[in-house]
Amino acid sequence: MRKSNQKGAALILVLWVVVLLTAIVTEFVFFMRTEANIARNFKEETEAYYAALSGIELAKEEILSAKAQQIYLKENGELILDEKGEPAFGEKRPERKGALGNSVYSYVIIDEDRKININAATPEQLRHIFKNSGAEDSELDTIIDSILDWRDPDNLHRLNGAEEDYYQSLPKPYSCKDGYFDTVEELLMVKGVKPEMLFGSKDGAYRGIAEYLTAKSSHIININTADRVVLEAKFGTAVAENIIMQRSAGTILTPMAGGIVNSTYFTIVSTGSSGKIKRTIKAIVMKKNDTTLETLYWNDNWLEKKIIKN
Image (tube, rainbow, N blue to C red; front, side):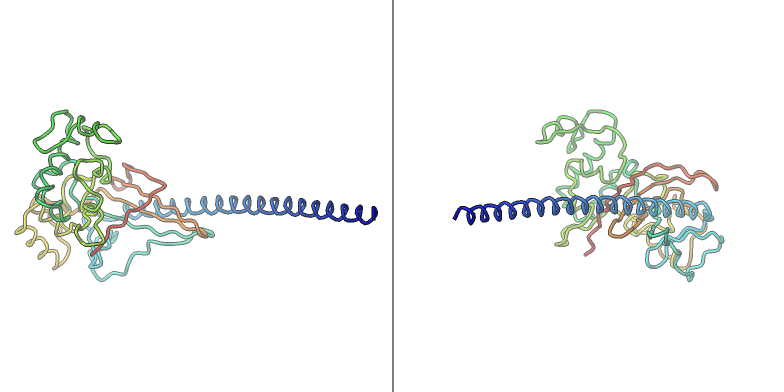
């Protein structure tokens, strides 16, 4: 009987040892898999970053090689930088993608001079743009005055505006900048501005206007690339119609109506992918001359907010 008990105890002990060893091995395997995943993710993250960086450099080269007066939009809205010096609306799509080792990249170039600069926009221009977003008339006065208060250097608020006292009274207080906007997204900190106004809403109540606005540009509109909404805000409906009519016949080569035909400010958005990892870099550059670009904005972990189209 005693031997039977001893055998039973030994069996239980062996089973516990097996369970313990199984747990240790399982933990070890899990740890090694985790380490392998971390190493692979780091490798793919690095590859994706440098692929995106390659796209940025190629975009810079494309901008520098372009003839300044030959910048225009194709019918699909894609920006063309024609290095040949001859506008050709029928030319094929530029190849703005490629591979780098195990990774791939693609990039877009956006003309910032086709947009309204929020640091220089007049109250009338701001009203036109924000009204186009779907903002109610009752909201517009607050939005416009608050934008002007945000960017001016003093602490005196306009009739419907907001200064330091308002922003400090919020549940999560912050300071009024009293200086120029650095990004369009900074508008979301301004009293009265809703995310839906910039990026649109699914119910169609608001149409996103972020694509019409910039914080980095020459303050003068490129009449070859500007959208109708921007042209109307800047020049009025009649002049905008005239510009669009002339543009339909081909690239406008001579500046008119206080606009320009050669842009110097551009946004580059480049995305690199490796495995399941994606990395996006956004840069805003200014073309100083045919050999030099100055980087005005850089974000190497850019998360794009898509505008909802209705």
